[in-house]
Image (tube, rainbow, N blue to C red; front, side, top):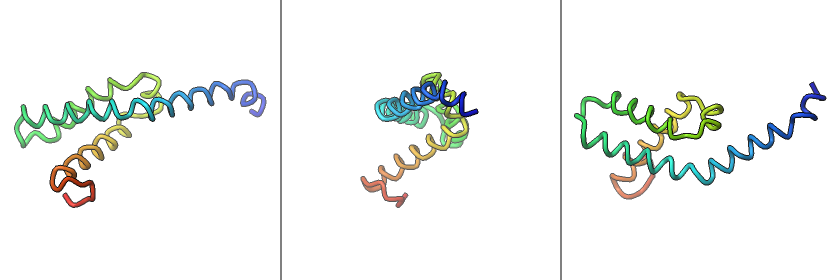
Length: 102
């Protein structure tokens, strides 16, 4: 096992660095696209279709993630992040602050 790590550890380190760089640089872009999709769904579809709207946004935004990131980040994990972004945006809209007051 140690031999394997010594021989191929650089691959794991490189993959981790790529993921970290992408998260730092690209996460804001993904979040912006998610906000756009959420706003579109809120405007175009009825209020009683909340779960359906969430699933449509999830499917579409998850596909925007690079394949290498999707390998490490499951759809269920991303769904939690997407829900956090939705909660933050809803919180921000009530008083201009993200302070869990919504």
